[in-house]
Image 1: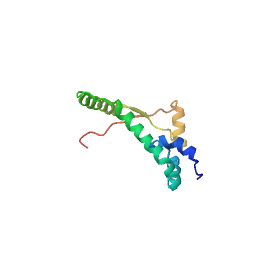
Image 2: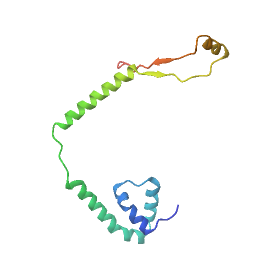
Image 3: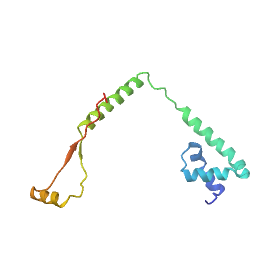
Image 4: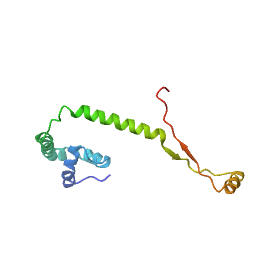
Length: 126
């Protein structure tokens, strides 16, 4: 693992504060911050980024209307019921499997084999 320069750490600082670093970047950033000199140099910048993020998150906060939650929950329930119904009747192609010689001859004689299965969702009582 290469150590990051102070300039690279400064470039990663906003993403660190927002929690959007990759796992490798986060490991490298945390390893660098274990160095007291680097931590001392970046602490003020990290605090500034945190303050800016907090400001952006609260400056334009909007309270959703009271009717939003029931409408949203109703829509989720509706989409789940549609999804369940379509899963009950979905046709799924069964993957081809190697045929024995006898079955291959039968398949050729009958013009090929197409197989589909109707997938059914388990009933609520099971």
